[in-house]
Length: 353
Ligand code: SAH
Image 1 (tube, protein in one colour):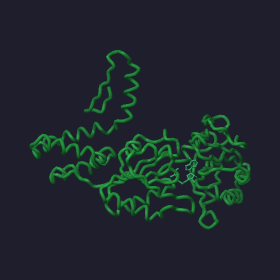
Image 2 (cartoon, protein in one colour; image 1 turned 90 degrees about the vertical axis):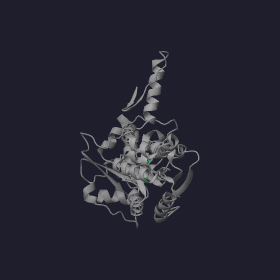
Image 3 (tube, helix red, strand yellow; image 1 turned 60 degrees about the horizontal axis):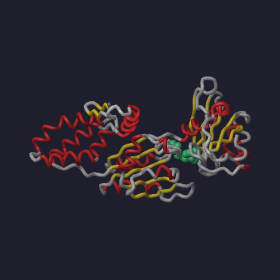
Image 4 (cartoon, helix red, strand yellow; image 1 turned 45 degrees about the horizontal axis):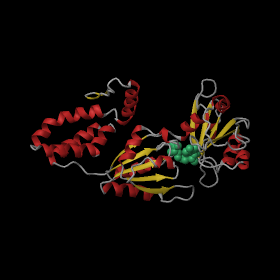
């Protein structure tokens, strides 16, 4: 039984293969959002009103179909129940299922498509237009609806295919045309993702949106490199910082970064690695502090370089390192030797430990 009370789905193989039934159940469980139960309840509570409003069965069916395929159902699934009920009341009163567009700001995780959330996949199957970044892996793009329009909005360092303001404006424009727009971002949209700015514009323009978290690079790289970000013996706190330089200098609260029992994770740190390393050591961090650089984390091309913060700039110079890369600094890095488990099939790079 798949239980989304009051919705129930029973699977039977007539006794032929209970294991197959279980496998089917697992597949279906992942396809049917948990909120379907609540959605059915809400629809049930509207049944009488809908019956009174539409006398013909065909009219009623069309009404419910429009609701189930549109933004009202999506609001329910996203936990915006109050707004969903209000829109349902409005739709009923005015006999229009809203054909308003909406935007889904979705975190696509660090690279491995298996790390997408169920909700991300569902929305990827639903959107008619997809705006994606350079960081979104091709294997993930493969999973969006076949007939969706794909728009590359870039963001290579210093080479933005589309300026942020234009991306914001495009999202608004497409949604106002009634489209369901997916804004796919690498990792998590709210961690160094400028997701906040995009949503700001949508909210100002009254466009409906929802935000789906993704696995951020720090979490993905840490797990796939076997480096816990916190650990009872080594680190009681963990900070995420950006190493991206505006004008050749890193503006960071250095003193907060050299705490002994803390892990520091650096996003966008490759170009500025020399200043970062010198800055930390200059403020008193030991040059022997363990540091790891994870390149293309969670993908089949993942490489992990384990060294020290003092040596890291040299390691970067001597190896041909491909972006994106994440730097993890702290004692927890020493656990990599014991805990690393992800060994992609590709030959590892010389110098990889
Ligand atoms: N929103 C994203 C981060 C965007 S900033 C997130 O939550 O992960 C881009 C930076 O993320 C890159 O410069 C790199 O430091 C890091 N990054 C993203 N994906 C990565 C990956 N697969 N491996 C290593 N670093 C990654």
